[in-house]
Image (cartoon, rainbow, N blue to C red):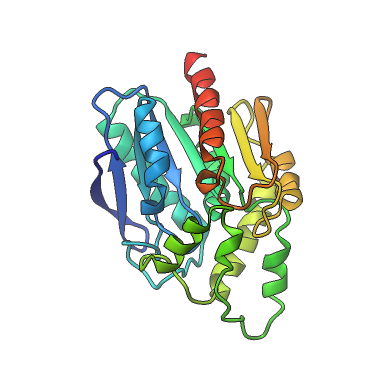
Length: 269
């Protein structure tokens, strides 16, 4: 397990805690963007694989998540989260000047990363999206029809075919186990619309990875968003039987090998 250290930066709406998995002479920086209700500490295995591959890894806890400030899981404007992520990228670049930066976003983090690529993509070397909330997310529209949002915890069996993943998630005190908050859902919807209207990412290389049994963010809905976003250099990897968290799946090493192969191609070029 790679050693990690924490940084606290000033975010748009309070302090943001970011984790760094350092590397003495990195080939690239990997900027990780976590999903809804979780925190960057759940990406320890991903960071270990990437640091072994030659990366320095950074990732924030978003506002209202993990160790960062704010009411739990309340995000009223995702443009603020994108701005906070840019502050962390600036910290990474100051720590490792001249090193290319790869952006890797999962689920809601894929939404954030996609919007980030639209705003700041000129400074990135590549973009990886895992089970991203993009395009059409029917669960979101269904939830917003309720007068009162149901307080039903996530079915942890939908995260991965590995039952240990769900058990650890359920016991994690930094994971939010309560209901959705309407302002956050409304902000997700607005951001989906903004991404759709804001055009593609041009020549920025994109890798999209997704489980074909993802019942939290189903693959067909995300595909419509990828079609709007992708530019001239992109690839997809769809894993049969895999559920939502492909980085925590039973075939996670296959998934991360695909990510590493993509990064190697980008860095070499």
